[in-house]
Length: 89
Image (tube, rainbow, N blue to C red; front, side, top):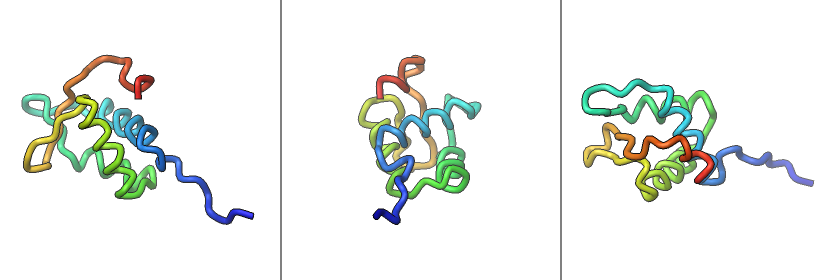
């Protein structure tokens, strides 16, 4: 008997897919910047993701070269604009 339910974003790839879905709904500001709070807010509060799941998904996107994050951590930029990103994860 299992009382714990499966987390939808426990897999880093699932979290990364959801983060990219969120990123695609945001209009970038100056120089393609997307403020990080516009990504983590929906993921953590509306989708019910955990901070560790958010971090794993973001780390995967950074490692694959899909996003780059500013050294201050306040914004990201999309580096790869191809539509094949989601299935490739």
